[in-house]
Image 1 (tube, helix red, strand yellow):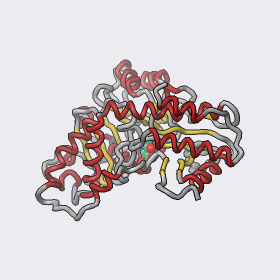
Image 2 (cartoon, protein in one colour):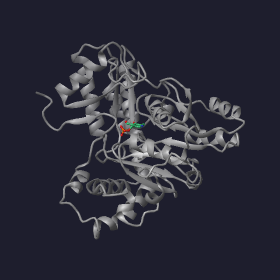
Image 3 (cartoon, rainbow, N blue to C red):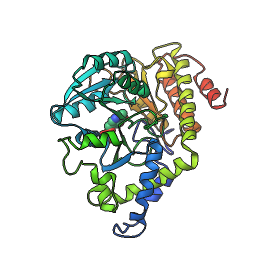
Image 4 (cartoon, helix red, strand yellow):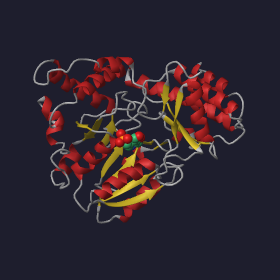
Length: 397
Ligand SMILES: Cc1ncc(COP(=O)(O)O)c(C=O)c1O
C-alpha cells in the first residue's frame, strides 16, 4: 500500500497543523485565574493585529468562520439595513445568507464563479444609492470555492470616489497569513478570519478585527446580542472578558505557537513562500491542462489566490482523482465546492488543492506528484512536464 506513511491533508482548511502547535496544546489544563494563561492574552491579540496589519481592535470568539461572520454583522447592522454583497463564489453567498437570516436587506452583485468583483459594477451600485441606504459592502478576499482573489484596495477606492459612508467588510478566512492583506492601509473597516487556515491552529477560534469607524457604527447597531457584542472583548483586561466566559485555553496555546512561527519566519516571507508555492502549483496544472480536460478555474494568474487552487476536470474525474490519491498516495485533495449549484458540495468534475499555512516545497511537490500518478493510473488525458515545471519554480527558474 503506497498510502501508508504520514498522511497529507491537502484541502483548503483545516490546513496542516504544525507539530509545534499541537505540542503546545498537549498540556494539563492551565489556571485561568492567574499566571501564564491570562498573562499571554495581550501578546496574542497584539500579534494577531500584526498579522492583520491593523492598529484597530480584535475580538476573539470561540467559533468557526460562520460564527465570526455572524459576529461581524451583529456588531454593525440593525434589522432591515441594506448591505451590498460582492459575490465571487460560494462563501460570499454564504455570508449573504447569514446576513439575510439576521434581517439585513441583501443586494447581491453576482460575478459568477470565475471572475473577481468588478469595480465598475461596485461604483455604479454606489452611485445609484443616492440616499446612502447601503450600510456595508461585504466581500470575500479569497473565495475558497473559486480560488479567486479580490481587489480589496479597489473596493475602498470605489467607496471613496463615490463619497459613500458604507463600511467595508472583508472575509479573510482563507487569505490571512497566506495572501498579502493590509487592513489599515487598504481602508478595511471590519475583517473576519478564523484560526484553521493560514493561522495553522485546529478549528475553533473566530476573529473580528475592526476600526474606529466600525466602533462608531456599533453604537447604534441593534443586532448585537450579549455573546456576539465585541465591546468588552475588544478592550478586555481580564482573561474571561476576551471570551465572555471560560477561555478556549488549549487553542490559545496552539495559536500562540502559530503566531510565534509566523513572527520568526516574518510575515513578508510567509506571503512570499505562499506566492512561490502557488506558482509551482499553477505551473503543474497549466502543463497538465495543455492536453486533456484539466483547467485552472481562474485563468489570470494575477487574480488567483496563493492559498488554494480550484480545478475543473470534467465528468467525475475530480472525484476519481481524489479517491485515487487518498487510497494510493496518502494525499487528500479538496472537493469542488459551489461550482455546479450554489451549494453543491460534491461536484465530481471539480477539485481543489489547498496550499495554505504550514506547507513547504516538498509537501506541494509531493501532492503534485501524487496527482500526476493518479492521472496516469486513471488514464485521464493530460499534458506532459507538469512536475518539471513545478520543480523549476521551486528551483527559482
Ligand atoms: C473564505 C471562507 N469564508 C468562510 C468560511 C467558513 O468558515 P467555517 O467553515 O470555519 O465556518 C470558509 C471556510 O472554508 C472560507 O474559506
